[in-house]
Image 1 (cartoon, one colour):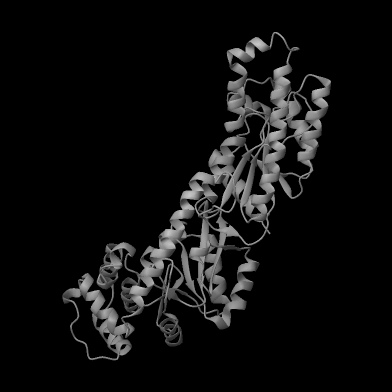
Image 2 (tube, one colour):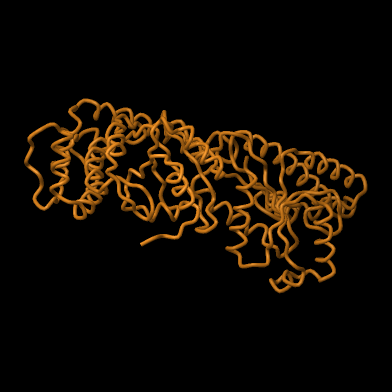
Length: 463
């Protein structure tokens, strides 16, 4: 059975063409889930082929990302790319040394075993991907299950093996050849061990007994759990800070970041183009793996600030003051505050972008009126000049790429917008005139297709 995954197939086919030895070395029974973006692609690449492998990734436009400090390991890199065929973010977890161990520690290496598998060519192709033979995978999984365990129980019980790993071991044991596995085990353990589980039905104690013979050590495990425990406390503290302060500072992120600064992407379009919906849909795709931040840059009708100011204007005390002050005074003050907020948000967005986050703006301000949602709206000439100054200062922000959603005015009306056809035509014409260098995405197709086009457009413009 062959899975039609153009993105993954292209990578693996190129590795075979260039004769770069590799192994998809972990949980090959979940290979299909990796293709669908549910889990990672865990690849082992011998160090001697690292440069050649990185050249392949560069040619195919995979983007390198960095993990948080508690998830970074020497000789392990992460790459991501948007897969338009599956409409998901694909993630490569590339090991130049095959490390495993307790969560967030990884204090044991399987590099020698994987090199031996490659030298012997003890591999099989699953869905056109090069994997260790199933009997080798049993050896690897026994070691991984033992050194990994579970933090809380592993601190006090060195025999504990997770149910997930036991279940996976039972599955691959039912597929593999028992005699081949026994011979490999005896070879790797350098023993005359003959107490193999009946029908290869594994228990936690049996895994421990087999793993100890393969590892020839019993000391690193408890140390690994202690380190893992400390790192988990550290991560838990940052999780709390992320919950409390995540909207204020870009350092509190649990997801991966880019190793370089990327453009800030702003999505614009006429009423009915689906700007806010597409921003949220795009966020859902990228948030699975990456640190993503959005800012609403409209003229006040969106998100917390706009809503709170609107509620302020509705208060009875404010309505009484309106009789004293000139007409539209409070409306003009409201729009000035929004313009100032947008200027501030763009400065914050630049900090996030420099910190490796992917930043997406919902709309982008401009100084013209034209009855456009995101333009200058003050009625008083003095206030209007201040508002335009603030907006102009915001628009000077460098490194912003505009994504324009193109939809016909007639389609916008069909989608339930109350604007007249003439108003929408004026807005569409102005957007094309104002953003001539914009990256254009057709917003006429179904919503999911538009989201896929936006995600692909963003990734093509990430350096």
